[in-house]
Image (cartoon, helix red, strand yellow):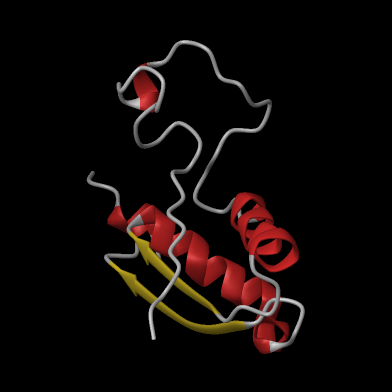
Length: 108
């Protein structure tokens, strides 16, 4: 039983596939919306695309590290019990190194 995997680089993070440079080095943003630790819309869109276009009925398992983990946890909190329903079909999640309290996690 294999898994089909989708990796998401948040806006401004990761590498630009066209220049092979860190996205944060790019001077021009292609989006009017910037990513931040509470922005779950991109993750919702990815999940919807998977369930509506790529693989309807798939079970969704989420994983996130650091701020990505924060976004996963926030999304699950926003969706509540609806996360496991047929609309989202989220069956599990694992996160690591999540700044649950970003202000307390900031060096002073």
